[in-house]
Length: 438
Ligand code: HEM
Ligand SMILES: *[C@@H]1O[C@H](CO)[C@@H](O)[C@H](O)[C@H]1NC(C)=O
Ligand SMILES: *[C@@H]1O[C@H](CO)[C@@H](O)[C@H](O)[C@H]1NC(C)=O
Image 1 (cartoon, rainbow, N blue to C red):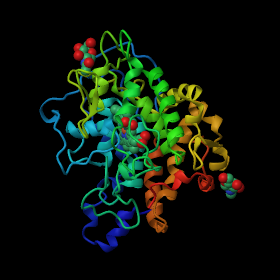
Image 2: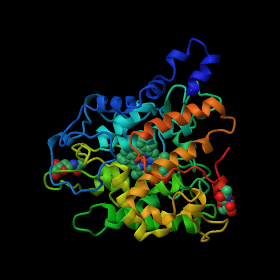
Image 3: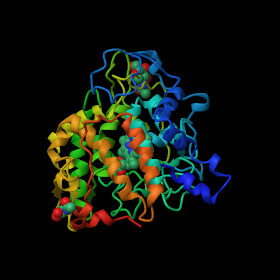
Image 4: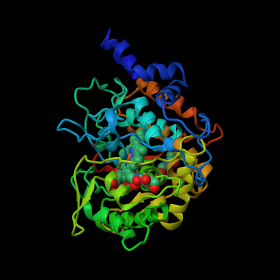
């Protein structure tokens, strides 16, 4: 039942107490992380939080509160990353680091990953906590309970058996995926998954070209999803969409744009995402002749930007995502499928989830939001043993899984089907599944 840090502690006797600051606590007390997240959130408005649930989903907002203004002054003023600061494929996280909501160096501790995303963007802790625990275990430093929003962390005491500390940029097919909103595919750009491909961004940008009141809402991002999917399918012979990184993360990256970057106001309580705000979050500038350019790491929360309201019914939860996913899947069914190209372009082949999950979930189950949310949580539990290094055995693996299980149990419906037999044989038919693996 002991976590890896404790196992490591046998080697690093004396250091053990200083290590695993959050994981040890979380194992002793399942509510610890959640409480820690809530305590760090000073901003509060609207309905009281109900912490134990995923939230009822997307209900249009009708009210607006001045507290939704996000502070970008003082200690939260924008500061460009320096040469030793890490930035990566996620614009939302890069912006947090630039504004001091995350450490400026881009290395984030387990609870801060969830508290800052909730406080600044209104990402529900039922979403943020699993995302940050998963990041810690799969590409973070399980000894220090930290993870990097981009490349490898410097000077970590990373366990030799768990979590290589590679960061989000080094997590291809585990976290980071092909077919992103604006970033390029690993295979096409020799592993550079963090750089914005301006032509890709432009295709999104131009979707509101001659529109009176431009608004990059869910419908627009779903149109863009059609483009990003077809773009990978038709240009990348090794395009691969993995069960979590592809199906969940790459699609969530599209729905996160309107859900978490829109500006809320009394006039538009439900939010509006205009051109200037979109460019600011994506570090894009536009010359007078309309030429777009990207400045690495310069993602910025605009001045006078108001996030979605907080509170259990308002925050963006896995249930909200599941509902957005149903709309996305209806328009772009292949994007809601695990699969890939088989070595040539335009050869996308989908796999039924039933074959991967030992029958626990079928592809069509994902169109049922309740089952989708179950899949989201249960899949992370099934994948961690698969992703940890093969040497991760015995108590180390048990400890890591126990942490994830403990946290996910706080949110998951006990009636969700468990993925007892995760079967990754399907991946062999997709050469892209092996791209970027050590
Ligand atoms: C702990 C929380 C989060 C984690 C671990 C995370 C992780 C990631 C990862 C791994 C990617 C790359 C996915 C891919 O390759 O397609 C990504 C992309 C993205 N994320 Fe996040 N993210 C988090 C929170 C957020 C938030 C709060 C926002 C919005 C404010 C956001 C917006 C996006 C967008 C728009 C992309 C697509 C980027 C592009 O292709 O240009 N994420 N995120
Ligand atoms: C958000 O909306 C408010 C109200 O319309 C406006 O004053 C503010 O400038 C907007 N912020 C951004 C970043 O567009
Ligand atoms: C695993 O999946 C493959 C198809 O990808 C299938 O042929 C095989 O029977 C499955 N194995 C088990 C134990 O279900």
